[in-house]
Length: 276
Image 1 (cartoon, rainbow, N blue to C red):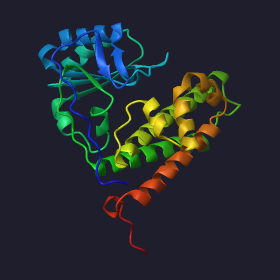
Image 2 (image 1 turned 60 degrees about the vertical axis):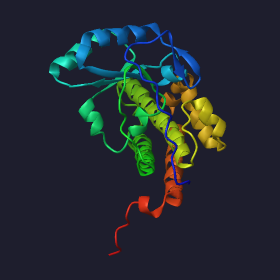
Image 3 (image 1 turned 180 degrees about the vertical axis):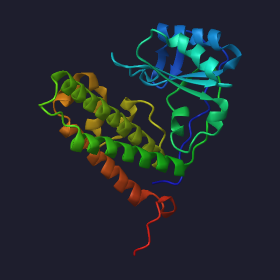
Image 4 (image 1 turned 90 degrees about the horizontal axis):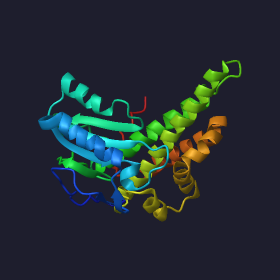
C-alpha cells in the first residue's frame, strides 16, 4: 500500500444548467431529458435556497441499466420544513429517483466516512460546492465500514432470512425479493470498496466498472463486478437461492479485512485490547 492517495482534478463548476452534454469519464454522456426537467424545476422552485445540484450514479457514469435510478445530490443554503416540502413537489409522481439532500452546514460537518462520493463520478449541473476533504486514513476507514456492512447483510440473510414454506406465498415472495435486493446492494458496496482500494494503491480512482475491471485479476472480484453489471438478469436466480451470492460477498469482505490488516500502517489499525 503506498503512502499517498490520488485526489481528483478540480471539477468544472457552473452556475446554470449547461448544454446538451456534460463531460464524463466515458466521453460525453447525454443529459437525459427527465433529469434536465427536474433540475430546471428545482432551480425555479428552490430559488435562492439552492446552492448546488450534482449528477452522479450510473446515468452520469454512462453505465445505466433499465432499472437504474436517476441520482442527484442537492446542496441547500438552508433547510427547513418549507424548503423540503417544496423540493418534494418537484419529485411528486416521479419514479426511480434517488436524491441525497444536504445543507451547506451539514456538508461542512460531514462525517469522516463517505466523503469520496463528493469527489468522484459526479457532474455539477448547477452551482458549485466545497467538497469535504478526505485523507488516506479516511479511505482506510471507508473500506472497514464497507467490509462491515457487507458482512452484516450476508450473514443476516444466511442465518435468519430463509423464507419458510409455511409462510403466505405472497410474503414468502416478498422476502425472497428483499433478500436478493439487499445482497445486490452489498455487491455494489463491494465494487465501491474495490474502487476505493485503488486509491490506497496509489492509482487513480476508477469511475466506471469498465475501468475497474481492466485493473482486476482475481476471478472472484471480477465475478462480483459482472454480477453488478448483469443484476437485472441475475436477480431472479438469487431470489430463488441467495446462498451462493451471500457466501461470495462474505468471502470478499473477509479478504478485504485481511488485506487492510496486512497492508494498513500500524497507526491506522484498531487498537487491540490488553489481554486479561
